[in-house]
Length: 590
Image (tube, rainbow, N blue to C red):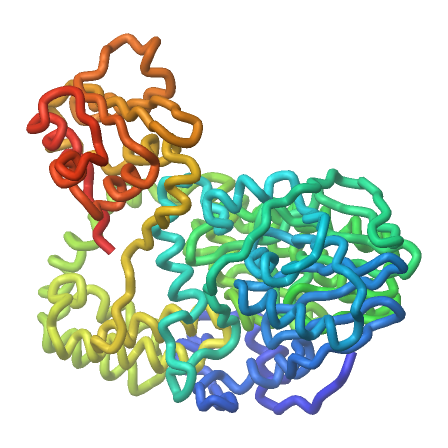
């Protein structure tokens, strides 16, 4: 692994702010010394992030040969790899969209004219460049985890409840820095990916754990039981070349929790996959977001430290829980031994260590901290209505916020200002002060997720960008599976409006599978009916329509009267009653 000179502040940050206790008054957000640098595009960012990136991430996108028959297609954040066999090529991951797939194909043709025989998806996040990557190729295998196609039908974001996917999609918009400028102090930096047009090709060759096959004359073994940031992760072992391709090892500490929202990321599954890789004794380790690691000793040290970090975070969280600590107390409880804290692969350049223990506790025991008083806590709005007058009112609160700001106590300033912001969210002075605090916090943060959310919301407060509250599914997703989205209407019913309603609406789809499903709204509750023909209550209203028309209705693009008037909906039942039934469901407000 290449070595680069590190700034003294970066060395100090590794040694002091992670290896040793990170107390509230030692935090980057509470006045600890920080050197702010800038990227080549002018983005302001903690200098330690720039220094760390030189150690573990590619600094350009020039393809190179890792070992005989294995090429790396690097990116500043995402990598692909190409395995060359006697009969053709195998491509590992396809990028974020059609543009990535096209670029990968162009780069591949610079060093090989062999046909692409297979693509392998490491997991569901980087699958969208497939169509342009394999354009013109024949009989291409698309290899992936058995769960991948199902996850991609939802979105690939990995939500526990698919009904809430519109919110994680909107958060991912901030997370991925889509709205941030390309240049300047508020510009994109760190983990910034595009959300280009998707060219996903479904998996046609799902693989099981331990399965072996020969593709393009190359022996492959697949490992599927380990997790990472999704539950559809696979690793690939090339036994004849001692090369392992994986997703679980990142150039930053593993992110057990993501603010954009996702399924719980089980640390034990993550370590299971890492141990499988260790047992293989690889000589080369190809990683999704970082430089590859070469040499068995280096590979095993990287894998071993990553495994031990995960085990330590889980076990120390459980230790803290046994000591009676609540989620907030656990934030600064975990202590890393120096060898892990100083490992560049464990740097907080993506997520933050203090997020993980609360997320694990939430999964293990739920939200309660054990204090009986917190069982009857006031809602945040009610607390703000009492605290702000107690603190002396708006002007006094803002004065104290500015004192904290001057001392670099940004976390405290944001917390204090939050009470006033709840009461007067449209107050121009309050909004600008919050934007200033978020921007300054973004500049000192090492975690790119933290920086991204803070800058997005600072710019939104200033009226420079508009952030979507939710991003609804697109028409293509809805038309692919209309019954699923009829079911998802349940969570949009307004129980107050529907408290006196007892009615059934059936949807007869005239295209696709020509299925019939229904919704029964019963005194404030909406129930999905998968088999209306055998249901106990007959339909009061029947809509006969195609999937595209239902998508327009679901997304509030057109109303029932308009669709019926244009002949796109055939209604059985009273039009006024059917329209009133549909009005019981919240419209999408983005």
